[in-house]
Length: 327
Image (tube, rainbow, N blue to C red; front, side):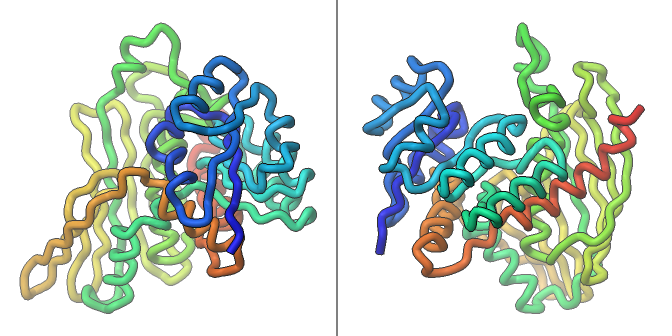
């Protein structure tokens, strides 16, 4: 089986623990080059993580003959551009979430990768994690009967970076991120529900800015319906008094309760009582999905985090935020 040699474009914070080491620790995978526009920071990352090559130019990394595939770990504003560059060079792409600023950009990325016959994966890494595979298996086992509805509640205190930073973090600058914190993290819950229960067919809702800490939306509420007929509601608020993250999948015989971002045990409640399943998150949360990508590139099995699945989530978020940004 071939060892996939990876290059990273944008070796920032997310690559320190969450993703970068996963490319070195996955089987048949090796990280051989990193790039950052600040060459000194790229060199520092390469030395600390024992990566043999570093660049301050993305095209140079993409053109490196030793680089087989590229992980794009930049803010969303650059995803389309770098994906197109990789596709034209014939290099498979693993791009960070959200997939792009707009759904139209997502479709452009898909089209060029399909035209150039280049695989396109998106870093919705929860699709690779054991805890979410367990939730999917529990739903499919019928332990909670026929699924009726889903409830999503995710609220947080404003971050210190927002309250005290000299400049706003890029995650709340729509021109760079595509929206606010909902765009950055709300996409994870929508995507994992797509993975567990199938595509969401319809979604309506409202977005607003209640705290006035930045221009992007800081609250989103939604009603949605899955293609299967399951219904759902969600609220994401990022100016609340505490941090809270709970999802419930309610069926005809019971319910499953879990968090998107925490490591609390999965709880399954039926008339017979409540069972808890404690599954620890991996140290490098991207690693299981990276392994799936590597296995896919080697023709062993299909990775479930594709450009098309990710584009579905981008379309939903765009619909929810459309009225807010057209004001």
